[in-house]
Length: 278
Image (cartoon, rainbow, N blue to C red; front, side):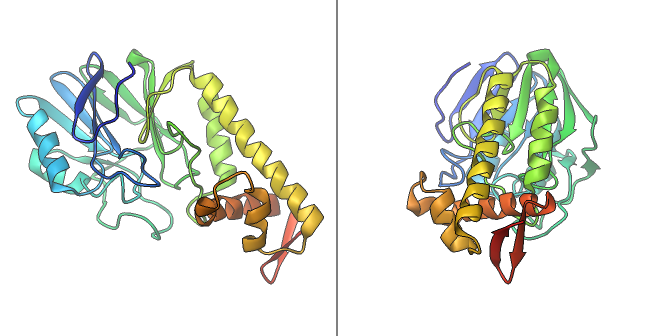
């Protein structure tokens, strides 16, 4: 099921599963947002991406002559959901997703017609999609389990080439790790992320991602113990010394998320913006 990630190129990944990459490449999005079309003649569209006219028009064109049942999103960051409302209006179908706890960084245009509660079933003729709440990267993040195809559509909870940024206050590291633990209890699946290639063998991918996060957490604790009291800007240089300095401004978000988790665990404290070991 491997295939190139070329914006604007419709690719069949498996029977009844197609991917159209949106033309929004960047640091956060890689080649672009992966929009998935699931179904043969009864189709669900997942993560329609940003409101780029050419992408919306392409999605309308490739679904001409079939029944589209809904436009669903994994979460409402601006590279995922702004196209949902205009696309759903053009197709005459409902939008499905959740509303985030915090508005900062979210798509203000997204107001789901139906809430994707845990267990919500979106039926296509390629099998059902089942909603699994996976907060962490975003408070309203939902992964969609496709048992018939042994696929999990992971949005930004699990990415194809990197670990996702966790940006407080809507992003929460403790919730993120708990959601990974829950996904690890599913059968071994192929992961279909919103950015990057398909990932086989979900159990190994999830285990490696959990260990990566816990290893980073251990570096945070050691760095605070050895250098505290210390501020975020100085701490990011130590904890992310293995990361390109050009990416430190982005890494700073996840560092803060780690620190807030450790603070809740009573392993670190913060006084006037300076972090120390408890």
